[in-house]
Image 1 (cartoon, rainbow, N blue to C red):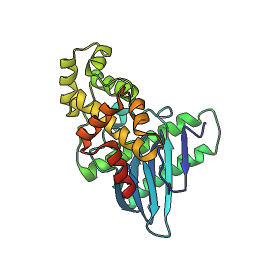
Image 2: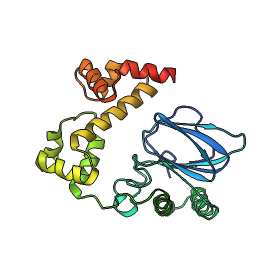
Image 3: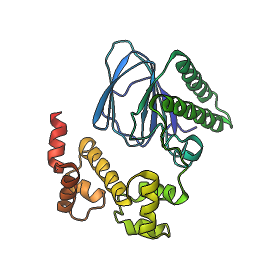
Image 4: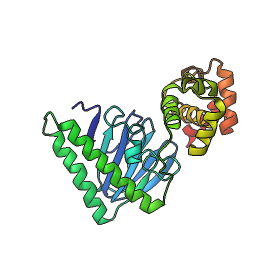
Length: 268
């Protein structure tokens, strides 16, 4: 199995990192400070911390003795979106409106330890069924973590998304850097803009335009923080033909110009 699709490591991420990978941090012992995108929080083991793909991550030890395992998997290995109707992990574990972590009691920690150890053991035994077995174990882990998180933070909307809303989310993930117009998405999905907005608003609580803006702003913030690109280069990368318009858009949505935001980050 290709290590760039699935791996389990024992080291922490002590510098700013951004990967196109989903990550589950299993903190067994000790205390860490996790910086995810632009928020920091302290965590004591045993606990699980969930990191979405492309999310900025930095982990620092708060205590000398820690024990942590970092499970990483790509969308090619286990597609969160294609499996959301079975695992709900996109709506529960990697839900950006809820805390990206859960604490574990002894029984829950033993269950998580067993599942991750099983995957580790399977990684060391190359065979033709390896990927299928690990995918099944990962699915079990995601389901179990979802159950624990729902118990801790209450129910979230687990209604299976309609095909049009599911297709819109997938299309937005693919095209947000090139297409910002609601009409483009409705045309591609063979539905009127009004019909798409109605479905998306009902199931996701926000309009198509709001979701496009949210996607652009979070990606712009990540680029301003983690890359060496200029504001002009970031504007072009995100599909803005006019950098000045991008700056006005960013300031309208965040109350700061891109340069002001970058300066704030440097001063943090």
